[in-house]
Amino acid sequence: MLIVATVVVKAKCYEIADIASLVVNVVYTALLLLITVVCLLRTERLDLTKILDGIDSFKDALDFIGSLPRWIHFYNNLNVNVQTLHERRDRLHVRLDDMIMQVEDQEFQTGRRRKREVDNWISSAGTKCNELETLLLQDMLRETSYFWKFLYRAWLGNLVERLIREVDDLYCSGVFEEVLSPVRERVEFVETQLVGKAANENSRRIITWLRRNGATRIGVHGIKGIGKTVVMKNIHNQLLRYYEHVYFITVTEDQNEYDLQGAIAKDLGIDLKEEDLPKRAAFLHRALRQRNFVLILDGLKKYFSEDKVGIPLGAGTGKMIITSRSPDVCRKIGCQNNIIAIDPLPDDEALYLFKQVQQALELKPPIEKVAHRIVKQCMGVPLKIVEQATNLRGEDDIGAWENSLNEMLKG
View 1: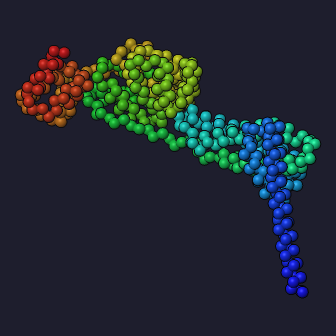
View 2: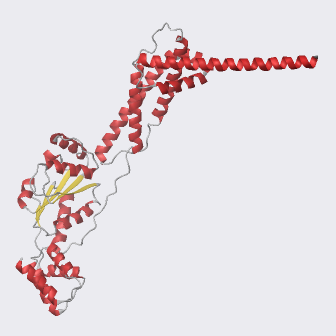
View 3: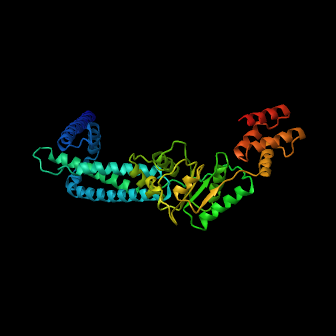
Protein backbone atom coordinates (compact mmCIF):
# COMPACT_ATOMS: atom_id res chain seq x y z
CA MET A 1 0.00 0.00 0.00
CA LEU A 2 2.85 2.33 0.86
CA ILE A 3 4.50 1.71 -2.48
CA VAL A 4 1.24 2.36 -4.33
CA ALA A 5 0.67 5.58 -2.37
CA THR A 6 4.19 6.71 -3.18
CA VAL A 7 3.65 6.09 -6.87
CA VAL A 8 0.39 7.99 -6.83
CA VAL A 9 1.98 10.94 -5.02
CA LYS A 10 4.86 11.05 -7.53
CA ALA A 11 2.43 10.88 -10.42
CA LYS A 12 0.46 13.76 -8.93
CA CYS A 13 3.69 15.73 -8.50
CA TYR A 14 4.66 15.18 -12.12
CA GLU A 15 1.17 16.15 -13.17
CA ILE A 16 1.34 19.34 -11.08
CA ALA A 17 4.79 20.15 -12.53
CA ASP A 18 3.48 19.67 -16.05
CA ILE A 19 0.53 21.90 -15.28
CA ALA A 20 2.82 24.56 -13.75
CA SER A 21 5.07 24.42 -16.79
CA LEU A 22 2.08 24.71 -19.04
CA VAL A 23 0.80 27.68 -17.07
CA VAL A 24 4.18 29.43 -17.28
CA ASN A 25 4.31 28.86 -21.04
CA VAL A 26 0.79 30.17 -21.46
CA VAL A 27 1.60 33.25 -19.35
CA TYR A 28 4.79 33.93 -21.33
CA THR A 29 2.94 33.51 -24.62
CA ALA A 30 0.15 35.80 -23.48
CA LEU A 31 2.63 38.40 -22.28
CA LEU A 32 4.54 38.15 -25.54
CA LEU A 33 1.40 38.77 -27.58
CA LEU A 34 0.27 41.54 -25.23
CA ILE A 35 3.56 43.40 -25.28
CA THR A 36 3.87 43.00 -29.04
CA VAL A 37 0.45 44.57 -29.48
CA VAL A 38 1.39 47.32 -27.04
CA CYS A 39 4.63 47.98 -28.89
CA LEU A 40 2.88 48.21 -32.21
CA LEU A 41 0.11 50.43 -30.84
CA ARG A 42 2.56 52.66 -29.02
CA THR A 43 4.84 52.82 -32.05
CA GLU A 44 1.97 54.20 -34.08
CA ARG A 45 0.74 56.52 -31.32
CA LEU A 46 4.21 57.89 -30.54
CA ASP A 47 5.25 58.13 -34.22
CA LEU A 48 8.36 56.04 -33.63
CA THR A 49 8.29 54.50 -37.09
CA LYS A 50 11.74 55.83 -37.90
CA ILE A 51 13.17 54.00 -34.93
CA LEU A 52 11.14 50.82 -34.53
CA ASP A 53 9.09 49.00 -37.11
CA GLY A 54 6.94 45.99 -36.36
CA ILE A 55 9.82 43.51 -36.53
CA ASP A 56 12.04 45.55 -34.26
CA SER A 57 9.21 45.87 -31.75
CA PHE A 58 8.75 42.11 -31.78
CA LYS A 59 12.46 41.59 -31.09
CA ASP A 60 12.30 44.13 -28.28
CA ALA A 61 9.38 42.24 -26.82
CA LEU A 62 11.35 38.98 -26.82
CA ASP A 63 14.27 40.69 -25.13
CA PHE A 64 11.93 42.31 -22.63
CA ILE A 65 10.26 39.02 -21.67
CA GLY A 66 13.70 37.46 -21.21
CA SER A 67 14.44 40.05 -18.52
CA LEU A 68 11.29 39.38 -16.49
CA PRO A 69 13.02 39.65 -13.07
CA ARG A 70 14.07 43.25 -13.83
CA TRP A 71 10.67 44.62 -14.92
CA ILE A 72 10.20 46.54 -11.68
CA HIS A 73 13.70 48.01 -12.08
CA PHE A 74 12.87 49.18 -15.61
CA TYR A 75 9.59 50.71 -14.40
CA ASN A 76 11.08 52.56 -11.43
CA ASN A 77 14.13 53.93 -13.27
CA LEU A 78 12.49 55.04 -16.50
CA ASN A 79 12.45 58.77 -15.67
CA VAL A 80 16.08 58.78 -14.56
CA ASN A 81 17.21 56.79 -17.60
CA VAL A 82 15.40 59.09 -20.01
CA GLN A 83 17.29 62.03 -18.50
CA THR A 84 20.53 60.05 -18.78
CA LEU A 85 19.78 59.29 -22.43
CA HIS A 86 19.32 63.03 -23.06
CA GLU A 87 22.75 63.73 -21.54
CA ARG A 88 24.49 60.91 -23.42
CA ARG A 89 22.89 62.01 -26.68
CA ASP A 90 24.14 65.58 -26.14
CA ARG A 91 27.63 64.31 -25.33
CA LEU A 92 27.71 62.19 -28.48
CA HIS A 93 26.51 65.15 -30.54
CA VAL A 94 29.36 67.32 -29.21
CA ARG A 95 31.96 64.67 -30.08
CA LEU A 96 30.41 64.30 -33.54
CA ASP A 97 30.59 68.06 -34.22
CA ASP A 98 34.18 68.23 -32.97
CA MET A 99 35.18 65.27 -35.14
CA ILE A 100 33.62 66.80 -38.27
CA MET A 101 35.42 70.12 -37.68
CA GLN A 102 38.74 68.38 -37.02
CA VAL A 103 38.52 66.17 -40.11
CA GLU A 104 37.44 68.96 -42.46
CA ASP A 105 40.16 71.30 -41.18
CA GLN A 106 42.90 68.70 -41.61
CA GLU A 107 41.64 67.72 -45.05
CA PHE A 108 41.86 71.32 -46.23
CA GLN A 109 45.33 71.81 -44.75
CA THR A 110 46.92 68.60 -46.02
CA GLY A 111 44.97 67.57 -49.10
CA ARG A 112 44.62 64.09 -47.62
CA ARG A 113 41.34 62.23 -47.26
CA ARG A 114 39.72 60.97 -44.08
CA LYS A 115 40.04 57.33 -43.14
CA ARG A 116 37.12 55.12 -44.07
CA GLU A 117 36.63 54.05 -40.45
CA VAL A 118 36.39 57.72 -39.42
CA ASP A 119 33.83 58.42 -42.15
CA ASN A 120 31.82 55.36 -41.08
CA TRP A 121 31.85 56.52 -37.45
CA ILE A 122 30.67 60.00 -38.42
CA SER A 123 27.83 58.48 -40.43
CA SER A 124 26.82 56.10 -37.60
CA ALA A 125 26.97 58.81 -34.94
CA GLY A 126 24.92 61.18 -37.09
CA THR A 127 22.26 58.53 -37.70
CA LYS A 128 22.09 57.64 -34.00
CA CYS A 129 21.76 61.29 -32.95
CA ASN A 130 18.89 61.78 -35.40
CA GLU A 131 17.13 58.65 -34.14
CA LEU A 132 17.44 59.72 -30.53
CA GLU A 133 16.26 63.23 -31.39
CA THR A 134 13.08 61.75 -32.86
CA LEU A 135 12.55 59.41 -29.92
CA LEU A 136 13.19 61.95 -27.17
CA LEU A 137 10.86 64.50 -28.71
CA GLN A 138 7.96 62.14 -28.15
CA ASP A 139 5.88 62.40 -24.98
CA MET A 140 6.95 58.96 -23.80
CA LEU A 141 6.21 59.46 -20.11
CA ARG A 142 2.74 60.93 -20.21
CA GLU A 143 0.13 59.24 -18.05
CA THR A 144 -2.13 56.63 -19.58
CA SER A 145 -5.25 54.95 -18.33
CA TYR A 146 -4.58 51.69 -20.06
CA PHE A 147 -4.39 48.70 -17.74
CA TRP A 148 -1.07 47.74 -19.28
CA LYS A 149 0.58 50.93 -18.05
CA PHE A 150 3.07 48.97 -15.95
CA LEU A 151 4.06 46.68 -18.82
CA TYR A 152 4.44 49.57 -21.25
CA ARG A 153 6.61 51.67 -18.93
CA ALA A 154 8.72 48.62 -18.06
CA TRP A 155 9.21 47.86 -21.76
CA LEU A 156 10.11 51.50 -22.44
CA GLY A 157 12.58 51.44 -19.54
CA ASN A 158 14.25 48.38 -21.05
CA LEU A 159 14.49 50.12 -24.43
CA VAL A 160 16.02 53.29 -22.95
CA GLU A 161 18.67 51.33 -21.03
CA ARG A 162 19.64 49.50 -24.21
CA LEU A 163 19.92 52.80 -26.09
CA ILE A 164 22.14 54.23 -23.36
CA ARG A 165 24.53 51.30 -23.79
CA GLU A 166 24.56 51.76 -27.57
CA VAL A 167 25.29 55.49 -27.28
CA ASP A 168 28.08 54.83 -24.75
CA ASP A 169 29.69 52.26 -27.06
CA LEU A 170 29.45 54.63 -30.02
CA TYR A 171 30.92 57.51 -28.00
CA CYS A 172 33.89 55.44 -26.83
CA SER A 173 34.62 54.18 -30.34
CA GLY A 174 34.87 57.75 -31.65
CA VAL A 175 38.52 58.18 -30.64
CA PHE A 176 41.16 57.88 -33.38
CA GLU A 177 44.91 58.40 -33.23
CA GLU A 178 44.87 59.56 -36.87
CA VAL A 179 41.74 60.71 -38.70
CA LEU A 180 43.28 61.02 -42.16
CA SER A 181 44.55 58.40 -44.53
CA PRO A 182 48.34 58.06 -44.95
CA VAL A 183 50.17 60.77 -46.85
CA ARG A 184 49.67 60.47 -50.57
CA GLU A 185 52.77 59.07 -52.21
CA ARG A 186 54.62 61.85 -53.99
CA VAL A 187 55.38 60.25 -57.33
CA GLU A 188 58.28 61.52 -59.38
CA PHE A 189 58.08 61.68 -63.15
CA VAL A 190 60.30 59.44 -65.21
CA GLU A 191 62.83 62.05 -66.22
CA THR A 192 64.20 62.64 -69.67
CA GLN A 193 67.74 63.83 -69.44
CA LEU A 194 68.07 67.54 -70.08
CA VAL A 195 70.07 68.22 -73.22
CA GLY A 196 72.28 71.26 -73.49
CA LYS A 197 73.76 73.83 -71.19
CA ALA A 198 70.78 76.18 -71.56
CA ALA A 199 68.23 73.62 -70.33
CA ASN A 200 70.22 72.83 -67.20
CA GLU A 201 70.83 76.53 -66.57
CA ASN A 202 67.12 77.33 -66.97
CA SER A 203 66.22 74.61 -64.50
CA ARG A 204 68.71 75.96 -61.97
CA ARG A 205 67.44 79.53 -62.37
CA ILE A 206 63.81 78.55 -61.78
CA ILE A 207 64.65 76.62 -58.61
CA THR A 208 66.70 79.61 -57.38
CA TRP A 209 63.88 82.04 -58.07
CA LEU A 210 61.42 79.91 -56.13
CA ARG A 211 63.58 79.18 -53.12
CA ARG A 212 65.63 82.35 -52.71
CA ASN A 213 64.03 85.28 -54.43
CA GLY A 214 60.48 84.61 -53.32
CA ALA A 215 59.03 84.77 -56.83
CA THR A 216 55.33 83.82 -56.86
CA ARG A 217 54.83 83.73 -60.66
CA ILE A 218 57.32 82.29 -63.15
CA GLY A 219 56.71 82.02 -66.88
CA VAL A 220 58.43 79.71 -69.35
CA HIS A 221 57.70 80.10 -73.06
CA GLY A 222 58.91 78.58 -76.29
CA ILE A 223 57.66 77.02 -79.53
CA LYS A 224 56.02 73.60 -79.72
CA GLY A 225 58.41 70.72 -79.05
CA ILE A 226 61.16 72.96 -77.70
CA GLY A 227 61.31 71.02 -74.40
CA LYS A 228 59.20 73.06 -71.94
CA THR A 229 57.48 69.99 -70.48
CA VAL A 230 60.76 68.09 -70.12
CA VAL A 231 62.22 70.99 -68.13
CA MET A 232 59.09 71.26 -65.98
CA LYS A 233 59.06 67.56 -65.10
CA ASN A 234 62.69 67.80 -64.10
CA ILE A 235 61.88 70.84 -61.92
CA HIS A 236 58.85 69.04 -60.43
CA ASN A 237 61.06 66.19 -59.23
CA GLN A 238 63.58 68.62 -57.73
CA LEU A 239 60.88 70.61 -55.93
CA LEU A 240 59.64 67.47 -54.16
CA ARG A 241 62.79 67.70 -52.03
CA TYR A 242 61.81 71.12 -50.68
CA TYR A 243 57.99 71.28 -50.82
CA GLU A 244 55.37 68.86 -49.52
CA HIS A 245 52.76 70.12 -51.98
CA VAL A 246 53.86 70.21 -55.61
CA TYR A 247 51.08 69.93 -58.21
CA PHE A 248 51.66 69.37 -61.95
CA ILE A 249 48.64 70.14 -64.15
CA THR A 250 48.69 69.53 -67.90
CA VAL A 251 46.42 72.18 -69.42
CA THR A 252 44.38 70.91 -72.37
CA GLU A 253 43.73 72.82 -75.58
CA ASP A 254 40.18 73.94 -74.76
CA GLN A 255 40.43 74.13 -70.97
CA ASN A 256 38.50 77.01 -69.38
CA GLU A 257 38.55 78.31 -65.81
CA TYR A 258 35.89 75.82 -64.70
CA ASP A 259 37.82 72.86 -66.13
CA LEU A 260 41.06 74.16 -64.66
CA GLN A 261 39.45 74.25 -61.21
CA GLY A 262 38.41 70.62 -61.62
CA ALA A 263 41.89 69.53 -62.71
CA ILE A 264 43.53 71.27 -59.74
CA ALA A 265 40.99 69.85 -57.29
CA LYS A 266 41.56 66.34 -58.66
CA ASP A 267 45.32 66.64 -58.13
CA LEU A 268 44.68 67.89 -54.59
CA GLY A 269 42.45 64.88 -53.91
CA ILE A 270 39.39 67.08 -53.36
CA ASP A 271 35.91 66.22 -54.63
CA LEU A 272 34.76 69.55 -56.07
CA LYS A 273 31.00 69.01 -56.49
CA GLU A 274 30.00 72.68 -56.46
CA GLU A 275 28.86 73.98 -59.88
CA ASP A 276 28.98 77.74 -59.28
CA LEU A 277 32.32 79.18 -60.48
CA PRO A 278 32.85 81.72 -57.61
CA LYS A 279 31.94 79.09 -55.01
CA ARG A 280 34.35 76.60 -56.58
CA ALA A 281 37.03 79.30 -56.45
CA ALA A 282 36.33 79.96 -52.76
CA PHE A 283 36.53 76.25 -52.00
CA LEU A 284 39.87 75.85 -53.80
CA HIS A 285 41.24 79.03 -52.24
CA ARG A 286 40.41 77.74 -48.78
CA ALA A 287 41.96 74.35 -49.54
CA LEU A 288 45.21 75.86 -50.81
CA ARG A 289 45.78 78.96 -48.71
CA GLN A 290 47.27 77.18 -45.68
CA ARG A 291 49.75 75.16 -47.73
CA ASN A 292 53.20 76.05 -48.90
CA PHE A 293 52.63 74.80 -52.45
CA VAL A 294 54.00 75.10 -55.96
CA LEU A 295 51.54 74.77 -58.82
CA ILE A 296 52.88 73.96 -62.29
CA LEU A 297 50.51 74.66 -65.19
CA ASP A 298 52.02 73.13 -68.31
CA GLY A 299 50.77 74.21 -71.74
CA LEU A 300 48.67 77.28 -70.89
CA LYS A 301 47.05 78.67 -74.02
CA LYS A 302 45.46 81.87 -72.74
CA TYR A 303 45.37 84.23 -69.78
CA PHE A 304 43.26 83.41 -66.74
CA SER A 305 42.67 85.16 -63.41
CA GLU A 306 44.07 83.23 -60.46
CA ASP A 307 41.44 84.88 -58.24
CA LYS A 308 38.59 83.57 -60.38
CA VAL A 309 40.09 80.08 -60.35
CA GLY A 310 40.89 80.20 -56.62
CA ILE A 311 44.70 80.07 -56.54
CA PRO A 312 46.16 82.02 -53.58
CA LEU A 313 49.61 83.30 -54.51
CA GLY A 314 51.93 85.00 -52.06
CA ALA A 315 55.06 84.69 -49.96
CA GLY A 316 54.86 81.69 -47.67
CA THR A 317 51.74 80.32 -49.36
CA GLY A 318 51.42 79.65 -53.06
CA LYS A 319 53.78 79.86 -56.05
CA MET A 320 52.99 79.14 -59.66
CA ILE A 321 55.00 78.21 -62.75
CA ILE A 322 53.34 78.33 -66.16
CA THR A 323 54.55 77.19 -69.54
CA SER A 324 53.13 78.59 -72.76
CA ARG A 325 54.00 79.02 -76.40
CA SER A 326 53.12 82.69 -76.05
CA PRO A 327 55.26 85.21 -74.13
CA ASP A 328 52.16 87.45 -73.95
CA VAL A 329 50.37 84.86 -71.78
CA CYS A 330 53.31 84.87 -69.35
CA ARG A 331 53.26 88.67 -69.27
CA LYS A 332 49.52 88.92 -68.65
CA ILE A 333 49.71 86.37 -65.84
CA GLY A 334 52.18 88.69 -64.09
CA CYS A 335 55.53 87.01 -64.68
CA GLN A 336 57.28 90.10 -66.12
CA ASN A 337 60.34 89.90 -63.87
CA ASN A 338 60.62 86.11 -64.00
CA ILE A 339 60.24 84.93 -67.59
CA ILE A 340 62.47 82.39 -69.33
CA ALA A 341 62.52 81.78 -73.06
CA ILE A 342 63.60 78.30 -74.13
CA ASP A 343 65.63 78.63 -77.31
CA PRO A 344 66.42 76.00 -79.96
CA LEU A 345 69.46 73.82 -79.44
CA PRO A 346 72.71 74.93 -81.08
CA ASP A 347 73.97 72.71 -83.91
CA ASP A 348 76.48 70.72 -81.85
CA GLU A 349 73.98 69.91 -79.08
CA ALA A 350 71.29 69.06 -81.63
CA LEU A 351 73.61 66.58 -83.35
CA TYR A 352 74.63 65.07 -80.00
CA LEU A 353 70.95 64.52 -79.11
CA PHE A 354 70.32 62.90 -82.51
CA LYS A 355 73.19 60.47 -82.10
CA GLN A 356 72.20 59.74 -78.51
CA VAL A 357 68.70 58.72 -79.59
CA GLN A 358 70.19 56.75 -82.49
CA GLN A 359 72.25 54.87 -79.89
CA ALA A 360 75.25 55.36 -82.13
CA LEU A 361 77.77 58.09 -81.41
CA GLU A 362 79.41 57.43 -84.77
CA LEU A 363 77.55 57.14 -88.09
CA LYS A 364 78.90 55.71 -91.36
CA PRO A 365 80.36 58.43 -93.64
CA PRO A 366 77.64 58.30 -96.33
CA ILE A 367 74.87 58.39 -93.71
CA GLU A 368 76.54 60.93 -91.43
CA LYS A 369 76.43 63.63 -94.10
CA VAL A 370 72.67 63.12 -94.57
CA ALA A 371 72.19 63.00 -90.80
CA HIS A 372 73.77 66.46 -90.47
CA ARG A 373 71.30 67.84 -93.02
CA ILE A 374 68.35 66.16 -91.26
CA VAL A 375 69.38 67.65 -87.92
CA LYS A 376 69.75 71.04 -89.60
CA GLN A 377 66.17 70.79 -90.89
CA CYS A 378 64.94 70.12 -87.32
CA MET A 379 65.86 73.72 -86.47
CA GLY A 380 67.18 72.78 -83.05
CA VAL A 381 63.74 71.59 -81.83
CA PRO A 382 64.30 68.55 -79.56
CA LEU A 383 60.94 66.92 -80.34
CA LYS A 384 61.64 66.89 -84.10
CA ILE A 385 65.18 65.64 -83.55
CA VAL A 386 63.97 62.76 -81.37
CA GLU A 387 61.25 61.80 -83.87
CA GLN A 388 63.65 61.67 -86.81
CA ALA A 389 66.35 59.82 -84.86
CA THR A 390 63.84 57.25 -83.65
CA ASN A 391 62.39 56.63 -87.11
CA LEU A 392 65.87 56.03 -88.59
CA ARG A 393 67.35 54.09 -85.69
CA GLY A 394 69.21 51.02 -86.93
CA GLU A 395 68.59 51.92 -90.59
CA ASP A 396 71.62 51.12 -92.84
CA ASP A 397 70.05 51.92 -96.19
CA ILE A 398 71.24 55.33 -97.39
CA GLY A 399 68.13 55.53 -99.56
CA ALA A 400 65.86 55.53 -96.48
CA TRP A 401 67.86 58.40 -94.99
CA GLU A 402 67.67 60.42 -98.20
CA ASN A 403 63.92 59.80 -98.49
CA SER A 404 63.44 61.09 -94.96
CA LEU A 405 65.47 64.22 -95.75
CA ASN A 406 63.48 64.85 -98.96
CA GLU A 407 60.19 64.61 -97.03
CA MET A 408 61.47 67.23 -94.60
CA LEU A 409 62.56 69.52 -97.45
CA LYS A 410 59.12 69.26 -99.05
CA GLY A 411 57.44 70.06 -95.75
